[in-house]
Image (cartoon, rainbow, N blue to C red):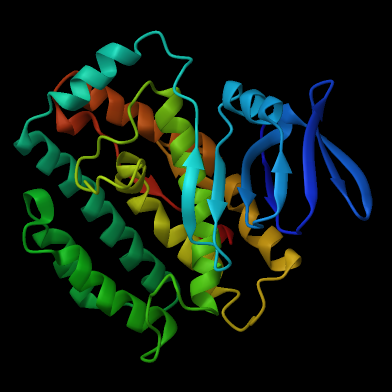
Length: 297
């Protein structure tokens, strides 16, 4: 199973391909890793040379290449679109979704995100009853923006009164950025392999964002990243060791459709359920009932 998250941080790296392996040349020597073992690649240095042969091979294997800034905020992504015989039919279904159908789907995603946030706080013995109220009152399209109201209470309760979620800040925010980048790449792979167009979202609609649907669908999984970052909140440095602690989130065992499975597998099935929902114009087929299993951390 693909489970390696590669990070190219050092300047001067040269990345090539040889006999099905990714070859990384640096001042310290040469290292290789099978392309089929790579889940995603994060590029953070402005001085990395990567051959078109490598890019093509990764796209053929549906491996996302994500370019990030120094705080691990994604700046750009590369992902292939080929590989699914029903792509045209599925993307046509995306385009033809009615406003009410989009609203219902987004309502389910937001409710599940708030529910997971509430479950994490309960797990940490920081329960906020108001989170349950937010969960039950989410409307179609989340027209009253309860997602944002819940977030303000959630972040304050989880990390303290002085914490502010801001991708440009360092510290815990950098840890969150890194974890979300890994999560985003996992959802992006599943969206592409489902034959969906990642630019066509159900809520996010920024013309400069090529992954609107990915950002929509990843919302219910964000609290799992938050929980991992919570265990590292006393760490000031996003060291290689701490990055490894975050990258194993893809192997974290969750419960979905009454079965225990790695997060990466659950995300794939979750995206498949979304595909079924839009193909059948029935939001009820979008199965967001995920147990993120915080006790396993």
